[in-house]
Length: 416
Image (tube, rainbow, N blue to C red; front, side):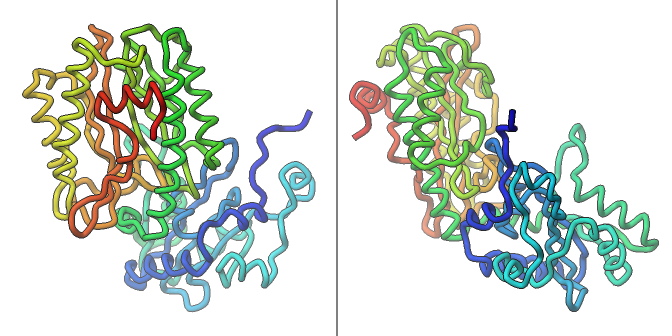
């Protein structure tokens, strides 16, 4: 029996690159400029891409290449080898399973946008040699928590520094975060497509939520709708939590049958050209909000409206969160809003960005207040995406109903 999970060949990765090679080259030139003509650095692509797995975000941002096991080296102090791409070697036996890998030709280099393309077998020697001429080593991230394994980039740079006495390691982990946080027009266009795919999924969910339906049935239908609309991948595992499961923020299972009068939290996102969407809607089983569930829903919606009004250049994400919290606390539900209201969105669903810095035009964030009351099996979250503009903000996901009457109409007859 053959394997079903086949990673992309380089030829397929080239065909999938969403922007011209010159666009990625310009991004790399900007990084080289910000490094100040010093700071040898390395960025790894993922070893295995396929079965819904996307390329590493930093690597994709600077290369647009989806090939398994590729590595990027930036060496500002080198005259010739300032930006070098390393690709896995040709392996005739493995290529029979995963697709033929091309030889290193001038045509390939042109198509990839790199003057220098080598095989990964020479990476260690290249880094050691370049380090003897470098002023410092630059760690660009990603940054992870203390309970997570150290990034491969950091381990490699540490190994280089141990082999080249006297060379130091300097953190530049905000450099790529700051670049990626401010979206280019092309990126925003991709994100609008991801939102459109995700909206198709929510349309399917609105029609499928009913008493007796299983969570996995709704999940299957909405994911099929996103793919039918053009989504190649999901941005994250879909969340469909009904009744008591609606109070679990990242509910991972999907076996429960829905009952009339309950609420269902549907938190989903499609991906388009590597860019994620993230939209949450809460549906009433039976098609009508009532009782305390309606009160909670209206409180979350009012909190979201208050928070959205704070999204503008110069504001801080903490300002947006505090606006939502004030509304929820005033309604008596302060202890049940247990997460931050906003996060950046882009190549990662929780994207790069500095929460301690003010918002700038071109940034995209979610606004997603929620109230979760396990004792009453009431959970509500409403999540939308906002694009920060020069004059304020654009509500990117406004087409999806939020007001209770609009959601009820949506479930009854579909979105018009």
